[in-house]
Length: 384
Image 1: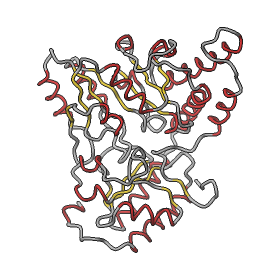
Image 2: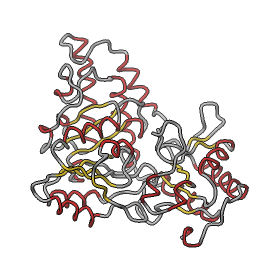
Image 3: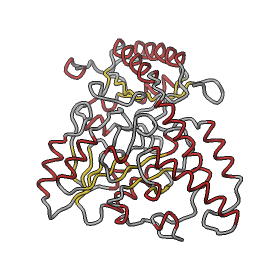
Image 4: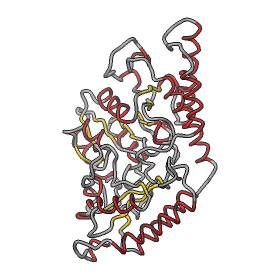
């Protein structure tokens, strides 16, 4: 994809995807409706119809029920609402590589470690839940796909373990939605969080989908005028919500079409990066088709970002939720990658990617790797 001024290629989809034309159209249509969805007059009913159609669409796409779909301002709010609303009185556990929004919401929770590819250690999860016993019910937070390395977690197996111990399971599906199949019922989760701008909707709209078993136990964080069946107060952001539903429908349709371009392009980038001395973080496990994390031993991530930006490519060093800072990745640290945690960049391909963009990136990355001097020689053990 070329940038707004046709001077750069955007490879930071996991931070935010380019908005899809269908989403822009839906947003414009909804913005033209004056009514408040809570009003009973004709204009209010018109707005309400748009809201409820969006709810039906989102629920159907992600394996939930419309009456159990709560619209939020995005993935962070959806995650925090689930944790605060379902976790009261429960012990909290979270994967070591969870998004910062989840980690901040469970600061004192038990940590489920991951292996070298970023896959959660379910044997440890089982043990931690067993140690809690039946008198200490738990809420487990486990993301479906990691936002930095793209690792896909064995959520279905985790759900079985949680059920065996009477624990609830909340799944952060923000990076997975629209890229791999996401189905609340099929996963066996009690709740899932999604965010519209991760699959081509506008920023500012997300959703929390709840299973029928827990929907009545959710406690709201924001009381208001009874919107979202009393689960989330405040007038809904109707244009953003309508656009979220349109983008989700298009993203899921594209994914169902069997396009394996993103995975092929990711693999081509991986192969070329290895040739330049890079380590593919989490490359031994199942990953999102659009995501790769490339660590270049001895070269600081910030230096790589600047070099690639000057070459016309927008990439990142991981999560985009650190106030614009380039910080050491807690995800890579949890994976045991040591110094590489500060030497890795994330390449995440948006829905607009074309083969030529990938070819140009491979050339730019190779030139950068050859030009940047390594600060220290990486050991063969680290490279492995």
